[in-house]
Length: 340
Image (tube, rainbow, N blue to C red; front, side):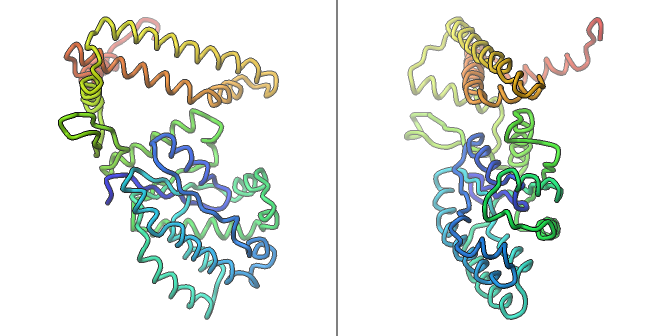
């Protein structure tokens, strides 16, 4: 297992694999590997006549997926994490759905040779959705070569994924039901999915890397494993030492208040944008979600800056912030407030 996380996202056509791969690539962060399926010259013909063009389509996909993943995965994981919007092994699933007889037997021989050379992921995220939801999403993105897809084929594919990943034992599988969430447009849903992925990675002993800037270590190295608040405090101690930053709780408090002001300005922009969107969508919650989504990158940067100064103040004062937080939240949990 690599010290960097390798995540593969799977699910039926239209479920949102590529969108989630981009989201996780930014959130973890990690490099993103997206399948290049548009280059398959047989794809449109396959959806028009599955039985006639299944073998050509499947062999092209097999070789294309092998060419894209062979060596690239291992080389990428030496630098950092990787999120792919497909699992190489899923090619077998499509082959068994579309091929039979001698064609399937020939495919299986080629797949067995190539599959041995593809690294397995540390985590597979399985995006689940009903057939109705899948058909709606396929229609919404309106790719020309997908317009001839039949509902029966999508339903068969959905059931094949259920069976395939129920028995998948090469890596842990995190199943996420997506019928009632929208991690692309709804920031609350997106944050929930990211949190679930982080928790699963932590449980597997893998998290995105954190730089250790201790000059005595011979330059920047990577802290791997599970990270908690003390790790981030340690990081800031190393950063301050490396950069020669002044350790002064009063100065850091002043800088923290400036960052709080920046958070307020970022939220102010979301409120203005929310009012602009309200007239278009007619629903305040949807307008708020869309406004926050549009400015989430800016807000995230300001919140990160504020957290950095909180960690620095804790370091200045010799406080273990995680222990202090858990103690205070325990008191809050057991406490009572008037009117509650």
